[in-house]
Image (cartoon, rainbow over all chains, first blue to last red; front, side):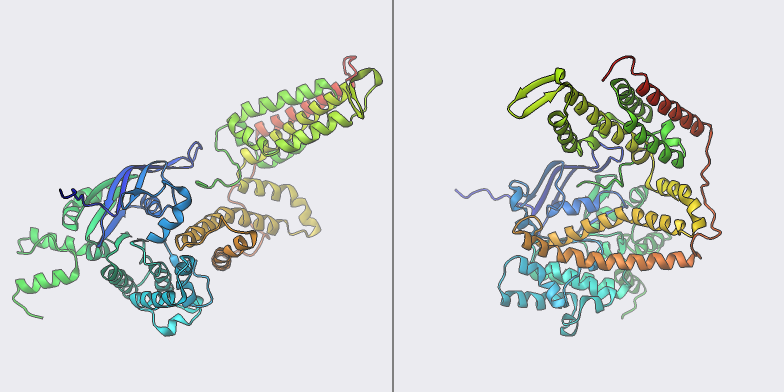
Length: 292
Length: 274
């Protein structure tokens, strides 16, 4: 008899609720009965307007915030089953917080990236390998690795901080607004690094962002949050086809999708489900018989 | 720690909340003086009753008031015990005598009085100042009360501005500290185990980024203030001008009457010696 294999999600969120400043006049409900699952080898995007509970949720994945109610399962086991072991969860679930460049403190970028792996108790050689590998993911060269982190540009600092979490080789990589406040080139290099990390490790990646363009371009699966609840889940076609519902909760669909939708409604023969400028270019060229 | 509340300000709509902060500071001082003026059981009863009235009028929940008293419970017990054992009374009032320990009725009374005095002092000053006045109002009030010192070239406005900025930035720095601690925890930093030395060392990854961001913020704030032509207190007007209203004068009159009552009761102790 073969055992029945149930495909298990990497992370399962079960009926999770959370309240800030409970019992005071400043009480705010941050999460209200959340149920979710996060899969491996996939980039999951979490979108939602400010104050919808996204940041609280992502801090629960690695045990920085403990749910008031409900459970967070990692590989099927409750991460809070033994609160003393929560440190181990943090090595498995790597969290890059908002503006992570403000966490840099070491004398060199190299040493800063090595901070996480050192805390894991890895040996020197392994740490060295990981530092150069992860610096490679985010596009930092030997030149930058030897500098002080405070001498880097804003975008480089951000990438160094992200590499610092990647160097722990987490099975789940969570990034809260990884590209906020960067120029387009900076955004692209950060997201490329994230995709490289996912392809090389097969990790489950979770990205929180306000940029619908970035989410449409890089995410395989989307979770939409509104008012402390899960509003919608699905792949990008499912989510972005509900533009009116998204607008109701203060969100938007990618600009290019709007353009294509308008073209489609004006009688041009293009698909409505186009989410990146590259895809739009391809569709339009095809329409006019052009080649590039 | 979930959420941060600056100071202990408790938002509610009460007469005391609406009083002028200057008056509230004066009232708190009067109340503290009164608690020291009390000498006999009648004045202490009056003091205690007035504390209860204050809590009721301010609409601060009892739970919140008790929370602030809990912090000083040790001091209260300590002074009470000292008073019980070390007060020497009239020989006919000796209650217990065992070896070198002598407990007199006066000692018991003194212990109760001192506890009532401390409790009333804390309740009075926190109801008038911390619970019902925002820190910004409080510094504004202090600035105005100290403004006569400007004649002596004391930079009152500058001190008040420094205090306001410091108070304003406490929650921001606390939040920043928590964020950086979380970020380093996420990279496996451990702040809660190991020897004292190890824990102190574990704080380095928090303190360095914290100092850097504090300096960055200070620089940003200075730039922003310069951009808005801030140049100190000379000739500067206020957005909200403090103005005493009828209720402020009524409260002053009430507190004057209260002080007089305490003094009178102290003098005429109704033939009761305690």
